[in-house]
Image 1: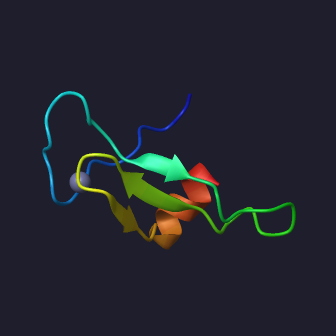
Image 2: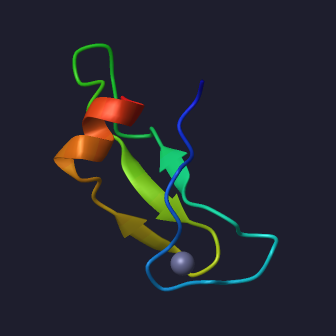
Amino acid sequence: MTPQPPYCPNGPHGPQFPALWKDTSLTGPNTPERWRWFCNGCGTYWEPTPEQKARFT
Ligand SMILES: [Zn+2]
């Protein structure tokens, strides 16, 4: 079962932006943990918590 991404701390932004997007543009073969959350609603990047990194990486 895929875990549900968290909601934006600045939200809610409306039904078209229900949750944060996992941005993997910084990751590579040797750095799979360097992803960030991105909110399309307010254009903000969020650093994942250690618990979120363990669950979503
Ligand atoms: Zn937001």
